[in-house]
Each structure stands twice: as C-alpha cells, then as structure tokens.
Length: 519
Image (cartoon, rainbow, N blue to C red; front, side, top):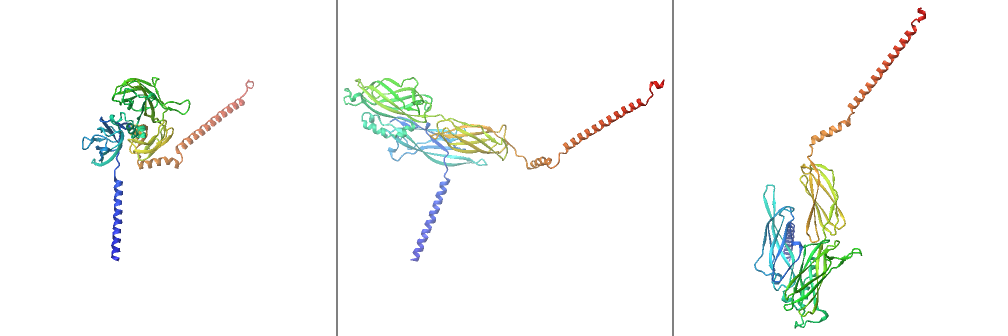
C-alpha cells in the first residue's frame, strides 16, 4: 500500500511540473508573437454590395505603419469549408495577391493595393457575408554590419459584403422581398450608407385590369452613388439613385419622385432640412421605365454646414402609372453618411532653453485646439530632427471644442546644421480608424558640448575677479585724485605768489619820495 501511495505521489508531482513547464512555454510564445504593423482596409472603409451574377473587384488597401521595410506581402482569402458561407463563385482552388514590398511609414511607397475579382453566386441571396483574408509578410531589419534579417508575421482581417437577391426571386412574391431585406442589418446599412425599398400599391387599393393576375408592377431602389463620394457638411453633391422595374410584363409611366430630408437644428434659427436642393425643387420627373428595365435619377443637393458626422436618412416617394394608367404609390429610403472636416490649430511653441548642448535637453510645449465638430482619436505627436533624439508623445482622444497640451523633452544628439529645424508630426484617427497626419516645425539649435578643461578655465576666469579687489579701477581713480590735488596746490601757490608780488609793488610805491619833496 505504501508503494502504491509513493508511486501515485510521484505521478502527481510529474504532472504538476509538466503543466507548469507547458504553461511557461505558452506564455513565452505568446509574448514573442510579433504584432503586425500592417493596416488593411477597404477604400473609404465602405461595405461593397454585389449584384447576382455580375463580376466586381474587391480592393484592399495595405499600409505599413512601422519604421522598417516590409517584404513579400501575400494576401489570400480564407475559403469556407461550407459552400453557403462563401458568397462568390469559386473558379480556382485558391486565390492569392502579392505586393513585393512596402517602404517604412511616412515615405513614398509605404502603401499599396491588391485586387480580387469576385462574382456573386446565384443562390447567395440578399444577405451580409463576412470575408476573412490572411496576410503574411516579412519585417526586414538591418543590423550594424548591414546584414538583413526577415521576421515573418501572419495576421487575419475580416470584412463585410452585401449580396443582392436574384431578380426572379424578388419580382412579385412580396414575402420573399421583405425577407431578403430583413437579412441586411440596419446598423450595417447606416454605417456604410444603404437603402431600403418599401411597399408598392395601387392608389385606393384597386388593381390593374390588364395585368390579369392582380400583381403590382414594383419599382425598387438597387443602389445610389454620390459625387463626390464623401459628402461633406456645408458642401454640394450630386445624388444619383439607381432604379429597376422588377415587372417582366408591365411598363411603368409618368413617374414622379420626391425627396424628403430630415430636419436638423436645436432652435428656430438653426432648424432646417439636412439636405436642400440647389435648384430649389425636390421633385424629379421621368417618363417611364420599360418592363425589366433600369434607370437613374439625379439631383444636386447641399448638406447643412452644422450637421453632425453620421448617416442621415432621406425618404424617396414614388408615384407612377401602369400600362392602363392606374396610379401606383411606392416609397424607399436612403442612408447618406455625412462627414465633417477636421479642424484644429496649434498655439506657438514655447522652447526652454532656446539652444542646448549635445547631451542636454530642452522642454518644448504647445497646445492643440480641436476647432471641428468631430472627435480626434489616438492622437500622437512625434518630434524628429537631425540634431535631436526622436521623441513620441501620446495624447489620447481630443473631444470637439476642447484643447490638450503637448509637452516633450528633446535631447540633443549632435550639433545642428543651419537653423536647427525640428519637425513635429501630429497623427490622429477618425471614427472609421483612418489615420491622418499634420506637420508643424520650429527651430532648436544644438551646439557641441565644451570640454571639461575649458569649462574649468572659464569658471576660474569668471571667479577670479570675485576673489580680489578691482585693481585697475582703483589705480585709475587714485591717479585722478592725485592729479586733482597737485593742480589744486599749484593753483594755490600761483595765487599766493601773485598776491605777494602785488603787496611788494604797493609797498614800493608807498616808500618812494613825492614830487613836492623832490622840488
């Protein structure tokens, strides 16, 4: 029994030691896993919408955010095991796109794009799919001897795409149309800009006698575009709406469209529609759309200058007639994202001291004022110059209408050339994670450090006058005093001799005989 107990104790101890070693190994591997410096995103961070059976390019923009060169960038979609999880026609066993390399961040060639050509499957339906891409690359580092080493990194990035239902599936079974629309999440449509097609019905509830089956010819919105692509608050843009007559038998005529924009503002002075037609009319007329045909309508609009950065929903009402002139009403809504321009300013730089020696530091500070209507995320200030050590200051998020202080200690590394120009690069992100930068510059002179012997001599020379009396000034003052005394004495003696001479002359005149006595 004792032997069995000892054997069990040894087994338990071995298991504990093995588990501890395993956990430690996992922890070390987790810490050593490199973080990918690549930022991968779709153009304008938008969600693409595919049409059934139509090929369309899927573009990914890749940017290097590190200070090292990135080589051998390979991007490949992760194909799902189940066919219904991948919305595109699979023509090849695997897909792959490459970039030879990306230069360090902030230099020319630090970004590139890869393109995949996808075609939506017929049975994908109107839904949202998630596409996952695997990105592999190598971080190139160079040691002091000029030898290059490559550290391989692997990361994955996922994106959403919208797919559209097949036309035959959405023509007249209203239930099918409604179900397909409900599969597209509203928050996704609002975030990237979307649309929603409502019901169509005859005015008064009647039906067309010529249709034979009582179906309503439906006109739906298949998409929209804006020119320019980004709608900025306070600017004009052209809205183009894509329409389709889903009926294969009935032409629609005498079409009238009206846009209803939401009202925005806090008081009577600022309340106004978010979008106003530049021509003064929000109505659009079209003669008609043939059965199964498509058409576009366009209108020039102006976005209100004080709009908050978010999507705004525009209502689109439609009135048209079938081939028997029976009136039909329908509606749709469009979600248009509006962006605000980033506005900020810097105060003047305060530099203390204005010049430094190699190895010493200077304090540089200024204020950042966010004058816009959007929040700045992950704000950083990076100081770079030929004569200073690179310094990075993280400021965090800056709310609209607020300010934050930028304070950095810059160390001199070598003597400046010229005026000692230093560049401060401010980087920030918007709500979509897109990074932008701004630059400011100032002068900070860096001088060579003085040798220790010269410093001691200088200190001695500066302290010597403090230890003794100012000999030269005293000697000069003494000489001046002596000269004044001598001059005063000489003047007194000269005056005394003159008085003595005058007295002798007067006595001589008194002692001499008069004229009467001589006669």
